[in-house]
Image (cartoon, rainbow, N blue to C red; front, side):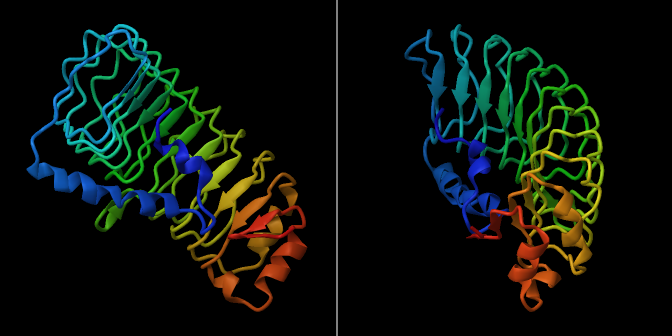
Length: 290
């Protein structure tokens, strides 16, 4: 697959939350294209299984009905404002609309085979229009204007949910909620929001990766049921008490932990104390321990 936001799975060594910050630089390239002529969707091979229109100045989704076999469709870094004219693409498994100008999730009901949907870096304010996507495994909604987690109950096949960096001035995503039906969820990315409490993941027992970097969390809690947890990013929060580290001892599979830029990380011998408390760790912040 072409370069897509599944790269969230390979964050760089500087710590969690960097993916959202780095990729936002692409906004400049898109905005500069406003002065150029809009691109036109021209289908060269109607039988193609993969079509790539990345960086093509496309303003409107159209002329796609002749695609009978397309499974992967990429429209990253364009000027699209509306999801439309996809009804005939029922074989589609991957749809990328990363970094466009979309405000509403709509007109996806016929895409019943969709497994990956990337709508990161748009202008979406509400999670909706996903009820028919029961095969969806990966959903990317980072860097939008979403203030509530909702309308995900039909996505029981979902394995990865990315909702990092959703801010509307003082209003932002502040609560982890409505994830009860996502029983197959393995990766949850909620960095750069206003979340104050780890909660609402009691039913998500398959979680292996949680990213809550750059939030307002003060306590590490409600994780004891996650015995498969391997990666936990909590850097840039307000965690001060050392008992928060001690309770992670029971997570025998935990090998990567980010706690830098919390109050407790400024204490003397921070790294040594964490290593003693959590001997199972392989990486603390950006540094390998063994």
